[in-house]
Image 1 (tube, one colour):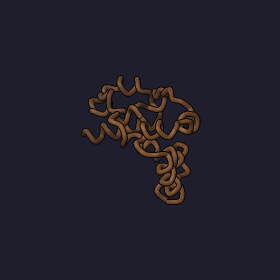
Image 2 (cartoon, one colour):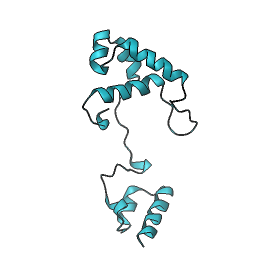
Image 3 (cartoon, one colour):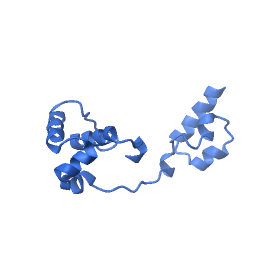
Length: 123
């Protein structure tokens, strides 16, 4: 019975039903009643404020000491690794979904995350 309710919920989401219609449907499924599960239908997602081209405008202007204080690695070492990543197949190529991020950005995000005690949401 619960599987049927989940299937109905998935169908409603696929049919582009608004979030308010989902919550008013009376479904007792745990999927529809949880508001903190990180899911929001496409019509209800809000655009987060982000700095555009942060790596190009900010990180590239760091001095060697500033770079090392943020990433715990010298820029020379970091960019040697980035060059290796660019030539490898470790950064996946895809045609669908969001735009592909550069090897530089992927590595710097991972390095920053590993260098700090912040949660992933803070990134």
